Image (cartoon, rainbow, N blue to C red; front, side):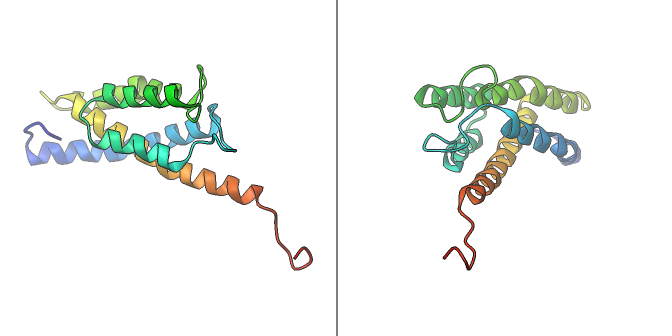
Length: 154
């Protein structure tokens, strides 16, 4: 948190954020499991693209910059999907609604606390969990597409 808070309040806020982590993990995993984006082939979403988004989130104090970068990526290629059920649209929706709501709830527990640094922390965690889960999904998909080698098929 960049604002001047007492260490006690800062610790309480961090505890509240950690308690919201299950919801963050579930939200991004659901998005990666259910949204439309290329999951196979040369246009599939690779971990590197997701890590680039995480890097942008880690280097800015603006949710709008994060969303802008994601829109830029959608404009470059189809890896994030297109349309209302795309992964990009879902991430932007989650940032603007669910994650913002969680940040506001936490901030409202403490007098005079700005929700924006909390929101950014929540966004960063959400995207970080997404990067991890995408790595897992891509590995599982890769294993399913590889032919199973048995002693008889060698």
